[in-house]
Length: 430
Ligand SMILES: NC(=O)N[C@@H](CC(=O)O)C(=O)O
Ligand SMILES: [Zn+2]
Ligand SMILES: [Zn+2]
Image (tube, rainbow, N blue to C red; front, side):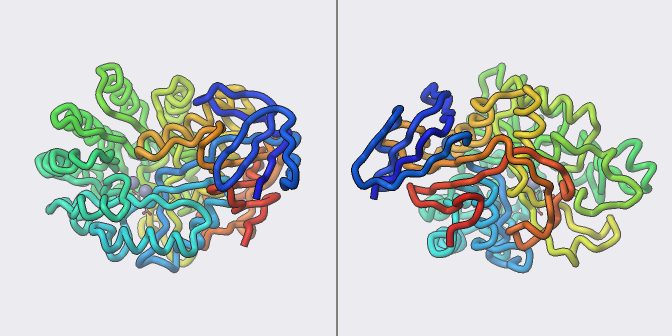
């Protein structure tokens, strides 16, 4: 059936759209974008005052299935994504069993098709068991639908092994996403190494522990010709290395999380809130400012959440023993809207680049455009909705957000995946 989305402010930089317009959806695709569309018998939804953009994609999410369903599963994680305004997520392979072969990738794809509230693009491990020793079954995983390779949660420690994985894997034309952490240097580091680690008496996780591998992987991208994407970048100097790589014309991209943009080590105080324990750690205010500059000038390609759910009982430990990670799917858009768009630092075109266009490009997915013929993956949001982050409202199974209590502006109201509504007036469509 035909559906007309009326009077929304449509923003899509990939087709230079920025104005109030109607969008006609037929058979899961966008059939027309114009003013004043009328079609006999079509369902009409008035979206006056809302924005309509290409469906947001979060290219760094932990859905935890198979293996850690007490933290999250494909059903709950994709519902959390829909609630946050996403039409697709790329899920990380640190599952149990590890997503390092075609059978596990095939399981995730099949399960997502059954219970998913958004598209799920699995990332396969680079190494078997995330051990950094033996190359995973990359071709097998690509055949089953893997869109990228990463050992996220860890990084391959040996440069020669990383080089071989890239040399082998590049024939599949998929991006290598790198979690940059030199384990020798980082050791049991808990928080950014500096004043705060000293004051709180916690082991330091130095910036250089990340930057060493950013430098290494940029060099390996140059050596092998393999595309590299730096995950959850957190330091000013690391970002400068990515800038230099881009200036050189290398196939290097990077992503940042809202928590590395808007929270710093200073937020970890004597309450030792374990939700603020993340990998890489929250850095200095100066790093946050440098990362925001990177978002503004385009040297950071994508905003991701690194949605890393953990059960309350797992986080309810001494800081040292709590696992790393915070959730993010349900606050990401609103945080970017509140802190970057509403403050005039970026506009909605840039936001769409960061949260919809670039993630698809980096993962080699079919582009989504608000234009005739495109698949109708669409996010609609109210740019002015005011709300307070309340853990009781989270759809995710886990509540380990670092933003509980934050006053935010902007919320997804409607989401369509292939023309089918997954979120309507802010409620998940069952
Ligand atoms: N980011 C985190 O703090 N944790 C992630 C792992 C990861 O993204 O490296 C997790 O799987 O919990
Ligand atoms: Zn990681
Ligand atoms: Zn991660």
